[in-house]
Image (cartoon, rainbow, N blue to C red; front, side, top):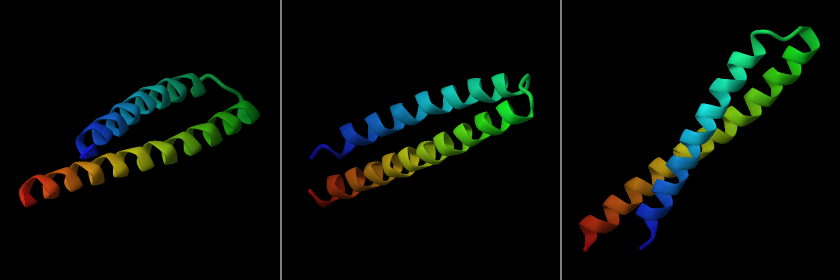
Length: 71
């Protein structure tokens, strides 16, 4: 099946999103209150997306292992 390919893609996207979040956190250090609040909200939303990608990638890796053992 395609579990391993999908897992790798999900984890790659999660890594890219993590790097982007890290850059946003550095930028937010220099912002004022209102701008900081907007940036913080953006980071929180992106972090939720990052967690979803990580969990799905790990799930698909486990699914791949189970399917491999079953053959």
